Amino acid sequence: MDFQELRDMMVKTQLISRGIRDKRLLDAMKKVPRHLFLDESMQHKAYDDMALAIGEGQTISQPYMVAVMTELLEIEGEEKVLEIGTGSGYQAAILAELSKEVYTVERVQELSDRAAARLNALGYKNIHFRVGDGTAGWPEEAPFNRILITAGTPKIPEPLLEQLSEKGIIIAPVGDRFSQQIVKIVKSKGKFSESFHTPCVFVPLIGEYGWK
Image (cartoon, rainbow, N blue to C red; front, side):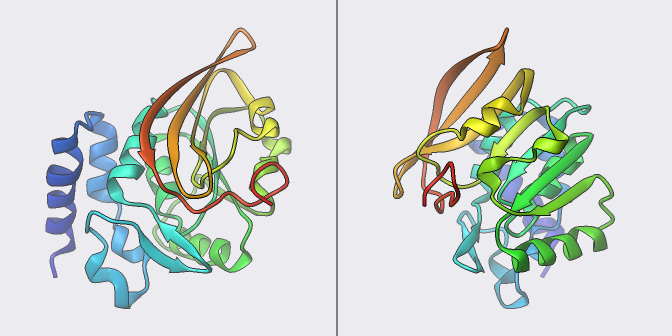
């Protein structure tokens, strides 16, 4: 199986054809070996147009959804990014290709350990891992220029709004447990503005400031 060919096809048919335009993002998604973030038995499906189970009741998001959310972050290269929900580590790898530093929080120890092992094996040096309640963010490392929440939340957790830098952006799936919409929050002069984007379905964000 030629995984590079499958990645190129994924980018062409699933991303470019649906309007993803950020060249750095497209290059990152051509480069990062998505199949290595899945169990061997699932690797043949890695470049299909769907979310896939990774264990512990969690999923690796559909490639298009990864691209949509990452493009909305408007990463230029020097940003410090906070990711809530490490999961497989695939999204963290994409963020690490595009930004200066990535801080990623996962509540399930086993998923965090597995992701860290994969990402370290792939040579990423700019990703930092924490196990804990992602809805509380990572206050010791704040502020962050960009924050990405990779699970569905009833609202943007207050600690994450507090940890966002001036001119920062938060992207999150916001809604009920079974359907959400991608929301983009931009901080300007201490105030937050929001815009609404793609409808989606994510696993729930569990934590003090998310779903109980």
